[in-house]
Image 1 (cartoon, rainbow, N blue to C red):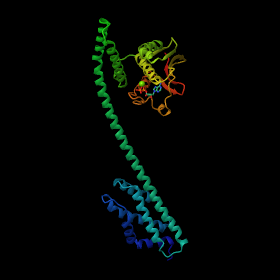
Image 2 (image 1 turned 60 degrees about the horizontal axis):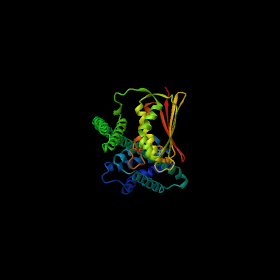
Image 3 (image 1 turned 60 degrees about the vertical axis):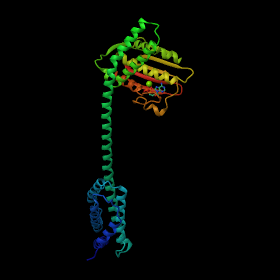
Length: 369
Ligand SMILES: Nc1ncnc2c1ncn2[C@@H]1O[C@H](COP(=O)(O)OP(=O)(O)O)[C@@H](O)[C@H]1O
Ligand SMILES: [Mg+2]
């Protein structure tokens, strides 16, 4: 009976099976502690079966290759093997088989289609194996990092809760100390150091309120109210007056007097304070220091903008200035703008920033009532 070239190669490989597998096994790289090290030779033998079948039929059997590749990839993952070693082992198996094939007594042009099919079988196997291996590995990495992220978040939440209840406990004694200092100031208006104490205590109260607003503890039992924008702006400037004077900054105001808002006026004041204090910081090294505050009503919305002529915010920071803990200052906390955005969002508004060489503007849009 006349044999095809594929059948001749298949028979030859079958006859030389042990020699082939021995040669190959002596060269493969397998870790001494690889839990699948005894399976490696068996896998080589299974691969040889697939190669023999494919050369007999001159057909690449994709389905069998996919299943086999998935099994091997899973074993390589479980034994923590390097994908490089795995590819090396497959490749020397391919060379071993192709070398043997060349010894079959057939002309080159008859061998060529068989050579082509065997190569196709190896390529397909490697494709599925590496694909599967990387898929499983990526999934493993994603699971690990989401676990780390979650436990990190849990720790941050606990830390946040602990510190906010701790700070909350400061508030009552602080309020009474501030009250007593005020009483002392009224009783002894010329007594030294009271003004310094009062300033420092107010600063501490400001920080505590800022912190509690971030940690949500400040929300307790608060009700929304109707208020007017120009009042809030005036109160803010009054509060910041000493800082503005000592920084020698000119403030230009253009605020409509008919702007009615609904929400939490103390929070909107906090937003203004944070943005103006940042502007004062930004202007510290400038000659001509200017801050402009505009607030106008538009149909359905109010636009409040606060600008200064300080140095621009570097482009790489623009994306992150509203994120918590982003700061360029040595003693900065990086929570000012984070808090501003939080408050504005709570008022169903939006906040954005634009900055160029001439001017930096924070623009807040709030719904009009
Ligand atoms: N008006 C401004 N001009 C220039 N940079 C600003 C201005 N406002 C904010 N920034 C930048 O945004 C950062 C974050 O501000 P903020 O959240 O208030 O935190 P902090 O003031 O504690 O640094 C600042 O450190 C600064 O780099
Ligand atoms: Mg700030």
